[in-house]
Figure: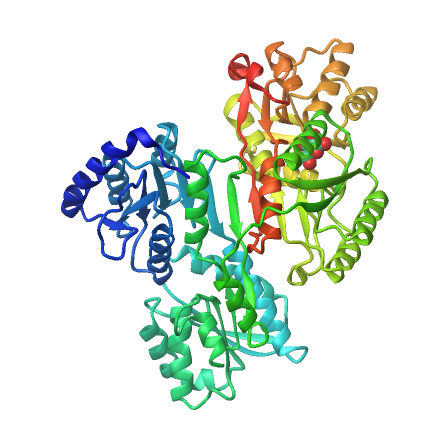
Length: 629
Ligand code: AHR
């Protein structure tokens, strides 16, 4: 419930005023089919849409309005930026002028709107960014699909459909400016380029519309007649393709595959049901999720993540009815106790201890019967734990894996037993993502942490000439090790005045960090300008070892680490650690919320990413006492 009693009268007054002003500025009201305002409404959500030309954007606004109708507490005002950044900035200002309590924005341009979004967020108005993620974390929540993944799913399906002999594929592309379309094509092409037996003919449309697709297929009928499959990356184009293929009398020969999979009449799922489309990769538009989370944010509920990457599913004639049923079934949490088996990687760091505590405490609040097994960095022990959870018949298994690889078999066993598996904090890499061996990943964006560390170095550690970096890595094969390293190198490669001179594993432990520095000093004089440590414990160990050799931390060498634990703050206050990139271990509430959602039958997103910041010595004094871990 988001009602805030004392604001009721002023809100009703404001809504009336807003109705008048909006008529003059091109914004529209939602939340009631009759267009009137709701009585008793306590929160106004402003929606700034990039444009209303693209079909899915119109569908998003419809979904947001429909979802809003379900709640007596909220009303939405929408504004169409017509693809113009300046107009979108003006729209946002107008919406704020109307007194909105929360902003939902799908930006025209993810770079040019960063500053405006940050300004709104800093002013205390929560911001949900949709579809295109903006750089940094200066917003409340991002919700969007993984379009490259959607394209890959379509490509993988077509490759399987054609089998070893391969065949001819016609690929339709729409407007060059559709970022969504280009990302889908990127994923699609990546998969098909690996298959030498598939020939692709590309047809470019002037506009992403049903008519343009129809005309193009008719004009290219010679090429289409030779094709085994036509691929279109959106429902609207696929509908034009279906009509043209029918009119050419090719519907028995040519199969059509698309992305979007909307649920309305003559949209992806319906076309599969009618047998006109062979398959669609269906992804929620996100409107329902946005309103659900908006209510949680306005109600100050705990467990709201930073990013939600929506799940996409392949829908064919075999699962179309089941998919529709899932989409149309209302989800209700009956509040019953859920039995959860948790395989925790170990107790290697302060971060991990805080993480375990947060999970154990949250389980009690969310009525979850938690059975946690600590694996002391042993994959074998994690296998044993997972197998014992399967024997016990728990409702959900959660795993924080020591390394990324080697999980397929045991995850298949859980799947055969009908027990869903959530990856917490660290993710796994499976051979075939289509097998859906895990339901979702909840944790940090490790790549972004690595990027942030290097961006801080780029902006704060400068001297003439090139600067050498020592990288102290976590344990080999763990997802935070791999991804932090990748993200760091991504930004490093754009800044040639920095280079990695030495890199070694410290396994995320204090002793490991000490050992890396000790070993280096056995063979070298100290010539390192910057240390990038994959966690705080290793950085603290490295600092001790440096001091033992008379090398002054932060003076002779700048040190940046990841986690931002209380111990790291103390080291910043002492002037030894230069900067700490946050990796938040307090994910108990978010995890328990995801478990309850999963258990009550809700479609799980691919990834749920937690909120993180970056701190350096200039902020350490202000934040040290607020640190919970
Ligand atoms: O997986 C998260 C990492 O694991 C933390 O950064 C590190 O401290 C921990 O041991």
